[in-house]
Image (tube, rainbow, N blue to C red):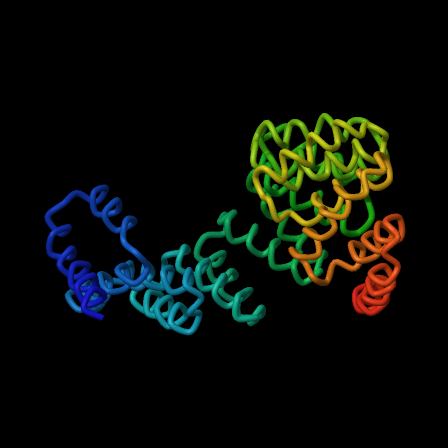
Length: 327
C-alpha cells in the first residue's frame, strides 16, 4: 500500500516537473508511466486545468485501455463539452460506444465527426469496420465509396472492400481489391495474407508466394506460417510442412492447431505413434475442447493396444463434437 501511494505521489510530482519540459519530453515521460500513474498524473493536471479538453481526452484513452468504458465515456464527453470541433474526440467516443455495444451511438459520433470534416477518412473507415462487424455490408460499401471519392489510392479502403467481397462470396473481386491494396501499399501484410488464404482454398500454388511475402513483412505472423504449413501438408510437401509448424511453435509453443498438425503427420505419414501421442496430449492440454485431438488420440491408443483409453477418448470426442458442429 505504501509503495502504491509513493508511485501515485511520484506521478503527481511529475506534473510539476514536466510543465517546464518541451512537449516531446512530456510525451515521452508520460508514455513511460503505468496506467495507474497516467491517471494520477492526469487527475492532477485536470485539477489545475479543469476545462482542458485534451486532458480529458487523454484520460479517456487510458480508461479505454484498461477496459473501464464507463469512465472512458464520461471523460470523452467532458472533452467534447469543452471542445466540440475536435474530430479525434468523436472518433474515440465512437470506439467506446462500440465497445459498449451501443452501435447506433457509435455511428452518431462518427456522423458528427464527418459533419465537422466531410473529408475525414478515419471516420468513414471506422464506419466500415463497424458495418463489417455488424454484417451491414451495404452501409460498409457506401462508406468505402466515400473514402475512395476522397482518396482514390487508399489501400485500406480497397482491403476492406475486398473483405466484404470475400464475405459475400465474390472471391474474384476480393482478389482484385486485395491486389489493389498491395499496389498502393507494398507492405500491406494482411492483404498478402488474405490473398494466400483465397489461393489456398483453390489449391493454387500462388498461395505459397503470398504467404511467404506475408512472413517476410512480419516474421512473427504465425497464422500465415501455420496456413503455409497446412498448404504444404495438403499438397504432399511433408517436411516443408513440419519445418513451418516448427517455426510456429518456436514463436508460440501453445499454438494448438500446429501441435495437432505435427501429431497428425507423425501418425498418418510416419507411423510414429509415441510422438503422435505426445502431440495430441499437448494439444488437449492446451485446449480441452479440441475434440479432433481426442479422436486422433483414440486412434493412437488403438494402435498401441490401449483400448480402454481409446474408448474414453471417443466418448469425449462424441460428447464435445455436437457442441461445436452445431454452432
